[in-house]
Image: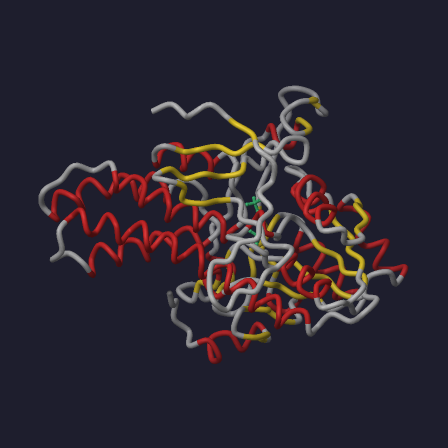
Length: 374
Ligand code: MRU
C-alpha cells in the first residue's frame, strides 16, 4: 500500500498529559502516536529544516519508517514496532485464533527484520506476542483491541520511565556543569522526554544552569541535526562540535561529565550505542571524566552475558561517502565500512541511569533481577 502524502503542521505544543503522575513538562513532546487507526510519526530525516509528519497506514510503512530512520532511537523504535504490530493485526481477517497467529507471523518478522541492534524493538514485539498468547481463548476482535492498548501502554510507560530516569540522573548534575553528549537521546528518540537528553532536560528544569557540548555524530548527524534542534527548542545553552574535537575539550578541562544513551546493554553492563560512543568513553577515562549511560530497563538484555553478543547494524555506505545523501565527499568505488553502533566495555562506564535508579554496570544483574521484565 502506498503512503499517504506527506503533510506538515507546526510542532504540537506538546503538553502531553498521559498519566496522573505526570505534571506539565515544558519539554514533553512525542515523535510518534497511534492516531485514529494509523501510526503517525515525525519524519526525523527532514529535521531540522522541515517538520513533516507521516501517517503510516500499514505495518509495511511503519517498517520502512524504522529502516529509513523516520523514527529512530532505541525506545522510539520499540514503540514504533509495537504500533506497527497492532496496525498489522487490525488488517487481518481471521475467524480462528490459529489463523490469526499464522497471519501475525509475517507482520512480526517484517518488523523484527528492520534494525538489529536496539533490543527495545525485540522487547516490544515480545510484549505484543505475549498479549496474543495470554488471550488466546478470546475472540480475535478483542485481541486486536488489546494489541492497540498494549502498544499505547508501551508508549505511555516509556514516557513515565524517562521522567523517572530524568529525576535520578539530574541528581548527578551540578549547577554550572558542562556535559558532553553523543547522538540524539531526547524526546525524538523515545516516547517523550528522552533518556540522556531527558536527564539534561530534567536538570535544567530543576533550575541547574548547565551547558551542553554536542558531538555532531557522523555519519547521520543525529547530534548536529536533532540534539541541537531539541536543545535550541528548549533554550538550553549548547555548542556543536565535530566528533574529533571531544578529546581536545576534555584536555582543556571544559567537560565535567559525559552522558549518552544506549541501544542494548548486556548483563555485564557492556553497552552498544551510536558509533563513536566507545571513543568518547575511552577519552573520558583517560581524562578522569565520569561517563554515564542513561537508558530504561527495556534496553537491558539479560539474555546476553557480554557486549560480544550484540549484533551491530551495518548501514548503507552512502551515509559515509555522501553528506546526508546529497554531496559526495569521497571518490566513487571506494571500500566503505559503516557500522551504526559500537560497544563500550563496562570498565569505561561510571554508572547506568535507569528509571529504577543509578547502578554500576556490575550491579545490574543483582539489583535489577537479571531477567527481562515488561
Ligand atoms: O541510529 P539511531 O539514530 O537509531 O541511533 C540512536 C542511538 O544510538 C541512541 O543513542 C540510542 O538509541 C539511545 S536513544 C534514547
